[in-house]
Image (cartoon, rainbow, N blue to C red; front, side, top):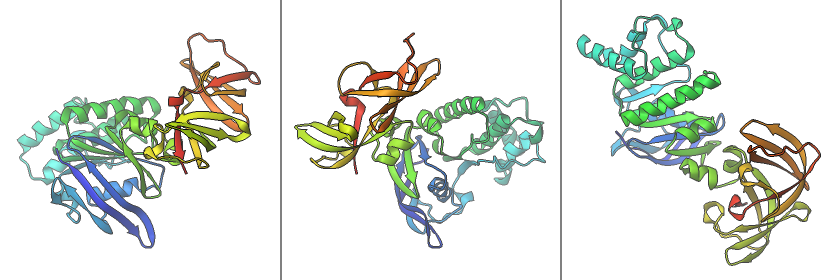
Length: 356
């Protein structure tokens, strides 16, 4: 297991910024995810770790070894690409064995390692099959076995599930995490899918336009977003504009549009920032943090849309000039209809205050 450290790493493509001043420290055995929309710099960062790109500035270390300009084949990494990059003219066995043959291992050692890798990904009976005889999920597992068979110090995965259907994505996601935990290999994963990031990762780095927005555990990223972008990108959130009108101790009173008010806490602010009276802020409220009925931070609105999912009842509610989405766990509740009035209350710990 290797530690991966990036120190002030930037990458320019001509005059365009691909990645700017990335500082991360991935722990040995950690599952670390780069998350963000297309074009945010996550794959560029991964490719610098792999050695396919060299940084314009900054350094990359595996443990204490400077690998900034080291060739990819000397980094002992395993990589799974979005398109799998399998050899169609080779069998499953031959594809998995390719990296071992490049290392000039004996045939006996290669067979032993390949058979072990096939067993890890549940492809024991598929060694003689050609790649075009496999399903998308099976091809993905071949690509994963080929990356793991060389016993890499670091495993890099670039959107490996994007070509799979929803059910297969979920099954393969669980399988990848099982293998990572079982093998203990340091893993860096690139995705734009929030569910993959939240369910698989020990920590997540959220990126936007080449700049790191926040690094933290899934719980920290979800419950304590550092800014408006993170709050709106991760999961669903009601982000309401407001102004701080009163601070007493840790209690913060916020005025929303249309003379609605919320009482929050200085303990629930992005990056621990101390707010001041008169400051324009945003209130991030997750749909599941809002309850139907009377209580703290009471808001009255009109239902615009009703979604029944079985597990939950989702309401889109017009509250003054704001639109809020709320999620009520289905416990046999009476379902309200479009146009009905509804009273909402938001507990203080359900409001996260983000300074602008």
